[in-house]
Amino acid sequence: MLNVGKIVEGIVLDHIEAGKAMLIYHYLHLDREDYPVAIIKNARSNDMGRKDILKVECDPDLINLDAVAFVSPQATVNVIKGGKIVEKKKMTLPAEIKGVLKCHNPRCISSVEQELPHIFYLADAKRGIYRCRYCEEKHSYGETAKMFL
Image 1: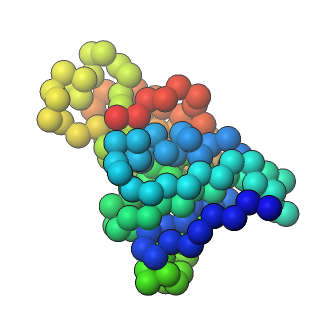
Image 2: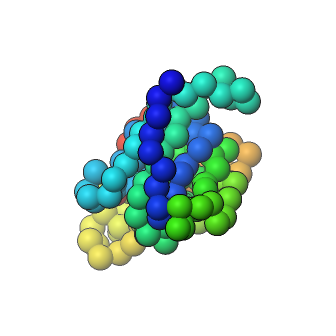
């Protein structure tokens, strides 16, 4: 049995689809931060068979939950303060994603104007299709290409 210590302040991302923890790690830019992070891959789950878990010790308000919802919309988020769970959230696909995805259309204004935020809106919730706010380029939930900022 794997034992990972408890955190005092931060978040625990649970019920992440197996194999998606590293993708969330990169979408959240945790590789650029110095927060303590625990990544548990392929943990046993009664409901899902296998799942990933991500524990991040930092101010919970610094984590962009839209990135989590985009990669693994069935994930749950436990907000930890003072060593206790103070809030539980179920993720759903967000209506708009800002600063998570990067438009891969080279003619898009967001590719040329560096200060312009990358914004995608949910065009088709059933199929998880997002479109760039500026050029309508399509980006689908679950795509294997890492198009993060």
